[in-house]
Image 1: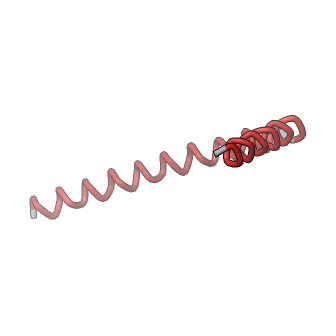
Image 2 (image 1 turned 180 degrees about the vertical axis):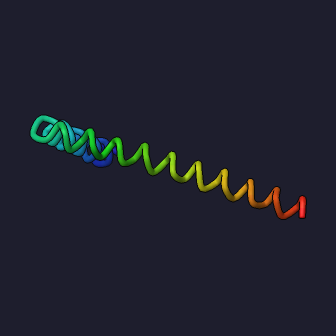
Length: 57
């Protein structure tokens, strides 16, 4: 358990260092994540819509 916590803490520290070095890069990564989530939601909507259309046919 302690090893896992230590590893997690180490990773957080590395992330903080990355943010300090490349703040824009981290922001762009977050934007990409949000865009990907939105795209997935949109694809899901399209699938559900097409399914409804099939039923109406």
